[in-house]
Length: 267
Image (cartoon, rainbow, N blue to C red; front, side, top):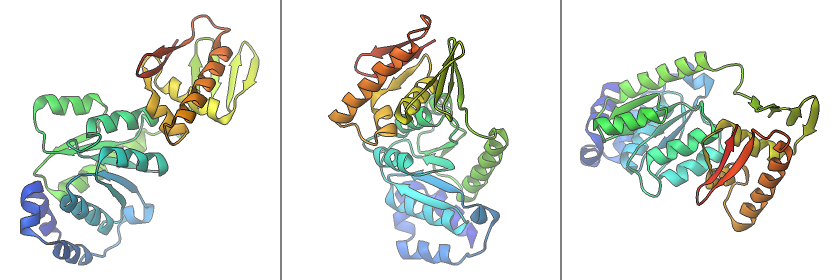
């Protein structure tokens, strides 16, 4: 029965709706109810795919295999979903409305540099593949594809990243002569320890993760304040001012404004 899935996925976007109805896809999925180890683990997948038929089929197949999968039809909705939920892996189509897959991957990487990402797309040009991997993609599949192969690749990525993953994501940062502990929310300089507020700590952590690179203003707002309203933007400016004050003891450390983009922590 699973061979049917491979045939369907291999058809790609255009022929999918012509070859199988929504109810037929559900019948195939319901026909396989075997429990897998992944189901017990409850691995959660963010699936960003703008083709409704293909997206629903992939989601149902993953659910049949024991994954929890959430489907988003554009990049902006997918990013909001990422901000509001915990995911173990992201599967991103590249050509999506509102926010494309490459931009979405960049935003996700700013929030969680260790998040596994697999690009799923019709774009097969060498330049596009190279761009995907330059963004830190763990894998890249072009349509048409075998859905069974997709599952194998997902499992391989998860095994690899789980082995590479340390006991926890990075929480200790060296900023010039400062030592920043994002768990304890402390900033230490020459033996003097400053206790930070939660938002100060979250903002400084994002700056550290993107040290010497631009931290996009909207990404920071949506990550910490959930939305990028005018009030929240002004609030973030106040926190940036406070962080600059705390870090001013070390002249080699600086938070600069990048006009029209965001901030950059230089150290």
